[in-house]
Image (cartoon, rainbow, N blue to C red):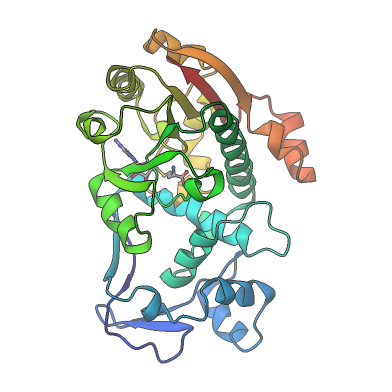
Length: 333
Ligand SMILES: C[S@@+](CC[C@H](N)C(=O)[O-])C[C@H]1O[C@@H](n2cnc3c(N)ncnc32)[C@H](O)[C@@H]1O
């Protein structure tokens, strides 16, 4: 378990830029983005950077205490759940850039309010990978939703992801599903919205699916950044559960590469967590072997998006084959 930070209702920050956590008598500074250390942020409070000002604007001028009014903020995560902070930190730091390629205002708001240094979760290659996959997942989902405008969408292993805001067409019914302790933390920073509901659920058993509507023209299940932490057997259990519980559906899944599994300990962001990648594939066909009800509709390496953005992304894509990087695949059943 990793304790990430603590804000307790009723504390009055002496400055909106820092908060005293009485449980350990430690003062947390507002987030330091892009590799700055916590100490460096204190000096930079005097000369606010462009990122600082943007984050403050995103917070709408509210203090940390106001932001979490009525909600004790004591975040404790299991090893896999801690990885939700990696994507959150990256989406927040990209949002704070002058010309962001993705904008996730909720991520920026949460990271700003957490006030912990998450720069270790935001190294270059992981940053580019998460930006690429965020773009690719949103584009793929928008395409499926265009075909099925009233679809039921399930973000399984949602973490702190706010994909609904990116793809909502005003008609879809969306469920953000995660393990109960992650949903408890998510409820501290998100509220249910019309057609967007948080739900406790486990990818290995389908009891939670019975409460979902069954009158939609399509069921779209999204699993981004989740399956790489499952063993082959757990992946099979999850795929069987989806095919058993949804009569028809699409699965939009992040496919972990075997290379990532072999080099889990060297991964630039995951090495800073207690999680490890468990299983990977060279092709989505390996999912079909595990669950023959699935049909593989498409599969694309994140290299295809990463190479569009930076020279290092181009070099990475050119020198390392598509199976070195993770992929997005769409299955139907
Ligand atoms: C790396 S985070 C990804 C979060 C989010 N999908 C994103 O891309 O930002 C992995 C998430 O999977 C969730 N998770 C892990 N095991 C799970 C399970 N058996 N059932 C449902 N969710 C699970 C974790 O709680 C965590 O929120």
